[in-house]
Length: 289
Ligand SMILES: *Cc1c(COP(=O)(O)O)cnc(C)c1O
Image 1 (cartoon, rainbow, N blue to C red):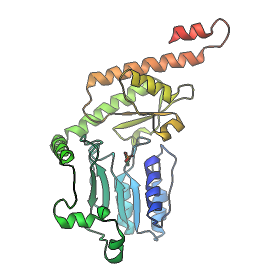
Image 2: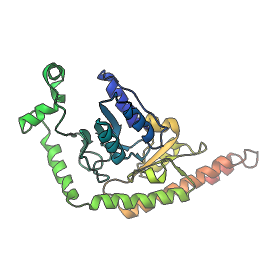
Image 3: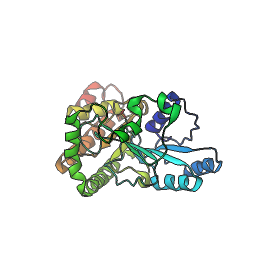
């Protein structure tokens, strides 16, 4: 766990009454790979479950290292690839189980969930009987089709969205956009949470100084037509603001978004620094807006 979505996996595990231990790193930091390795070396674990792209902090966890550790210690690897699928090239060989969705980086409508399953393990016997049938991946596979009703609209939209991925162009676009956004944000004097070498190249988390409220800044950006992320509980709690650079964004809109953000950061920053004397009172604040 090194973010909100890793934390959510522990919630899933608890609800399914799976026996598990949790290894935590600070939100915004990379996973503690040496700790993972040491735990794996203890030999009592069958599975490792982790998030690939930790959307809440903008950290891209190192799938290659996790695969390597699992290979060495004979563990199976399960990966939450919900935000990374379609955002960064992802090699799922050596991964036993992974999840993905239609709505994020793939850019189709939200609503479809993918389960990528290696050839093992199979659920069988009593365990299979206890599994809700809609969650039984084998049932989907054995039907060699669609065992339960699905929205054909969603499937058609996904089919159309996937055409963009016949080349690697979407990955290159996403990555190049993010680089200019990160540089511009840092030039404004703001702190990007994830260390550069662990940055997911599609979502940037800004840890705002306490004199800049993420709620206010996010709301002002929204009023100007730019939907940054700030409303999730874990963002509000920490005064974090996020910029996602996925999908069909136009270069000139990104430039405008950054111009507007810079303006608000400067004016809100100044407003807070004004001394609250009689002379520089509310009028001066108003003038500064
Ligand atoms: C979005 C996301 C999910 C799913 O969250 P929802 O609340 O269902 O949208 C799971 N894992 C990661 C890493 C995500 O980014």
